[in-house]
Image 1 (tube, rainbow over the protein chains, first blue to last red):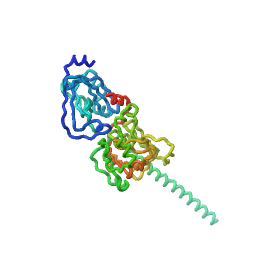
Image 2: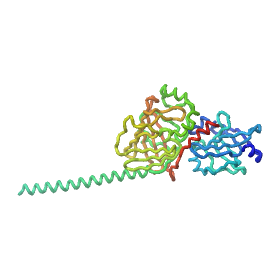
Image 3: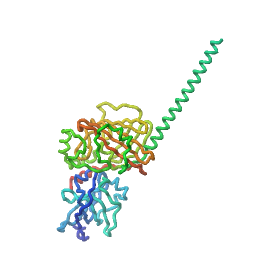
Image 4: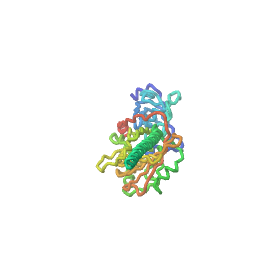
Length: 133
Length: 260
């Protein structure tokens, strides 16, 4: 499926690391994520798990060397996301999206979602905060 | 004849006095119930963590002197090895330092709920349903349900099960609801490896602000197995519309995190 999608879409894999204001978080946030390191990844949604304690998006993308990789994007608790306009149908498998979030401390393809965008740049539902859990 | 007349008068007096006492008793009881209904009415509703609110001195002054405050209310997290002002026992410190966060993110562990020590100050809604016999607190976090018995019962014995919500008894002290909780299971204090024991003893005091918009709470506890001093959190909730939603924890999250 990954190859099919990759050949169909020209995926822009935009990975940028920038400094942001420090945040404090709840649950497992600061164990896994660096509150001062943001990452932005564009790719195709492989699946979207929308259940507590945390949602997960698997995002197929290309790394800096053009290799196919899958990012694991963790979200705040869906029970909280629902109040910000999110639902299990907000993003679907096969959709192209760009996701911005806090990068994992170990540098792996893992992030905590802050915001997601459609290809036209419009934001998908509400922005999430590390403080939301 | 005179004796009979006096006896009759005395009987009348006793009768009238009894009626008066009965009426007074009913009036006082009605007043007490009315006051409790008013307090319950203010306490009931859906609440969520509010930041930046000033503390109520009358509530703060009820805490034990020299209590160590835990300053993570709402969601700010304390990193590993940082225990703030808590004076942690050697055994508890050693356990906390050996903590492996990934070990708690497994399919069998990820839906194990924390206790009220960590859940009450967390960034999730708490809906309160008060009555004269009991007060029910429905926490959105892990679908926890607390029952606070208001009927004067005592805590059960040592063999009673220990759980995330424990056994709670409450009483009104003026405008302050005081809740005493025992029988909690061992669970995290900070989510950084420091756990309280199952012998922790918790005293919570709840007070609604004059305008009814904020609920102030202190959560004070002692746990000699883990702490050499007493600890407390000061939490302020704001009244919110709506209701608590189901949490319905899905353990497959643990499998996803382990497999990444």
